[in-house]
Image 1 (tube, rainbow, N blue to C red):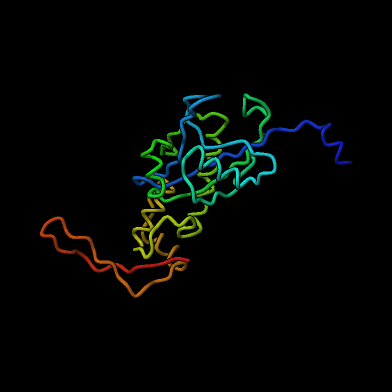
Image 2 (cartoon, one colour):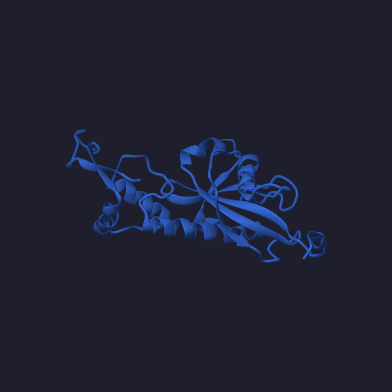
Length: 219
């Protein structure tokens, strides 16, 4: 087929949408924007944009985070192509969904400026353009990654005690974990240090309670 024949075939528009997840107040949350104008004005959605001619998908994803959510410095990864022709009532639009996970501290300024809202992933309800499906796909992918690795998205500050890592996993997975089972699963993937953490002060008397906890690092 000659290149000149390509114009004979109908082509969809291509968009990128980014599910930016974080852990806040012990819950897995997603960054949503309030659409200010145009289609679906006033509704919450993921930050997204149409891909410009000659633009790389990742560059479009970064542009959507900067322009729509007011955040920079992230590394979104391709998640899935959502190609249902009816997903967007404006026309035939393919969405190349991306996912990233950020420390909540890196999103505070955008939250304070009201560029984004952090919404519990279990409470998002229906979002336009099937964005709720994108969030569910992103949550599944991130949760699977935490079942297999200590901290694949770098959310915890190192070094850390094992209870801190377990708290993180429980926040991401959305349920409690058995302490000994978690230790047996994670310790082979961690590097113990010579350091220990001082136990927190007791509420009465202000003295430390219990033995110092071992500190760990991960690759």
